[in-house]
Image (cartoon, rainbow, N blue to C red):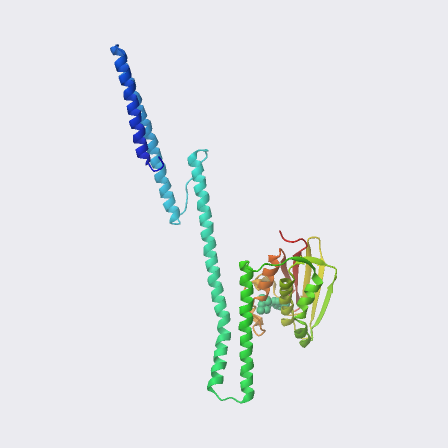
Length: 344
Ligand code: ADP
């Protein structure tokens, strides 16, 4: 039955109908002696037969028109055209089918748009990465060929080797940061969110900036209750805080000040990192958290523009968020908010 075409089903029903009507006619014809009754039986049977045929044809025509319309719509959707079929008001089977088709098309359009956006993002990322890698690689090539082709005095050779070392470190840092961000984004890194004193995590992050801060004679002060416990991943959160602290050292002039404080609020624990550095204009607040974004003015300071991106990624993976408030020329305050309850 499933494999039969509608036309064949109609033909079978029609044939069955004919056999039935014929049998009924024969039955009346041979059973009755009355000529008028026989004639009435013939007329009645023929009439029923004609009506049946008409009904079947009507149903068939309607179904053919409906399927053809459906095919045209599906073809139009497959070709990416607009589906402007009206919504059915009634609760018929056709209305249900129409609703499901529209829903399916919306899902198809949404996933197509998502794919397009992802493709564009990947393309932008590749062009950003190649842009970032180009300069250190070009520098390395240049230093290397100079060292190979020219006879340089030992001090000059040493200088070139140090410059090459800097470029290699930059490439290494870039690769490490990119691997971390892509693993975080892909979800292949499981964060271990456990209640832990935030003071210890801050201390761990501060460990990485003590020396550079000392070198620049920047005073670092901490104000945090050692009893404040908040659920977080110690390793990754300290990395996020380190990125903020590292920036504070990089973008603060010698003799400046850095302050770290933590406070437990009702829903979140807030960690502030303030500095007396160069500051950030308000219209750059959103930009600085983007991958590879660096302000024009800081190109003489080492960096690749991934620190804050990574920081935001780590904190938001734990259900928190990062904010910045700054005054150009006066300093900045980066605030990290970690939820007091583990994210669901
Ligand atoms: P990077 O420091 O490697 O350039 P980040 O993602 O850490 O990359 O920071 C992005 C940009 O935000 C920096 O290039 C800088 O322009 C700005 N920025 C970040 N932190 C500070 C700060 N504490 N003071 C001033 N500018 C900052």
